[in-house]
Length: 93
Image (cartoon, rainbow, N blue to C red; front, side, top):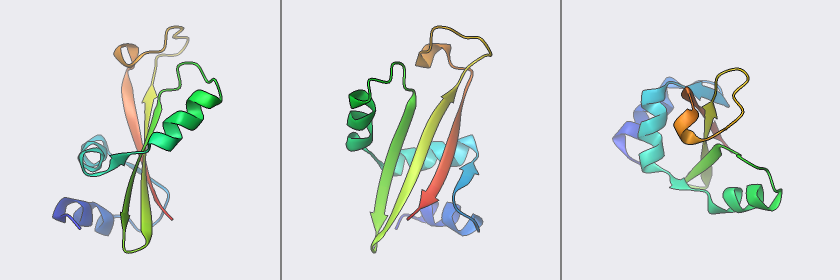
């Protein structure tokens, strides 16, 4: 287990939880993109679904990082370029 991941994990008492941007971006580099989540999203024909899921598995525990982009109220064209921020959510199962 990487030191950075362990440090973030030690700060969290409850799951699921919201992460600050710095921790979310760090975990995103360590985790692998969940291709099945993206394919399922495409199969639901959800247009402009700007949620991405990343996974990491260690000793039988699966850790999930959800990346969700946010937009201004009333924004009609949803793209990564038009986002005003990103939120990261962390869970383990």
